[in-house]
Image (cartoon, rainbow, N blue to C red):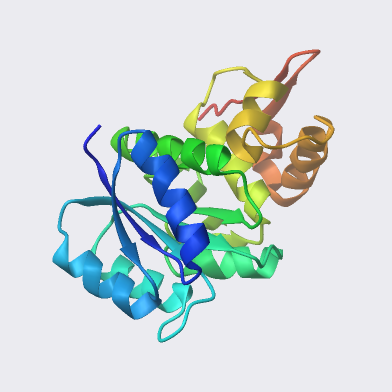
Length: 224
């Protein structure tokens, strides 16, 4: 695979565990013990294809390191944190993060997230999306409806983005859960229905673009 990943984590055992799993999958790894070192090592390694940042680190925390790296590069950034509140997740996205995973996590699931993020980046699947007056700004994690910003939760944003990016394609609940909630989700698949209902309530005239395919799932359809 020969792709280099920068891991910034102040807990050496966690850092080394993640590194060992990534190396086993064929990745090269550069390690940093704090946020400042992460920025410095990123600047010294111009072939890094993905950055993994813990939030709580000395000298410079993950948010600041993320913001600084994002100002220099479009490299995909995955945030690791023991904080799993929605507010923390939104903060990470506003700083320019592309993905977010809360501790404790399975190293196998983390590697899967890394591969999926790299796959999306390679396919340019993190670009903005626009249909009619509905605009989704991926990096800013912002949804605009006829120029007006609407407030979405992180999962609502990811769900809407996935639907719009696959416009006209029927997506099963299993597909949606695997992509939006990831493979480690063990809850009821009816959570998809709940999030769809909340999205429709926020999208105004675009609510009807999300159509239900009975006994299958959902699709996004826009007719100009």
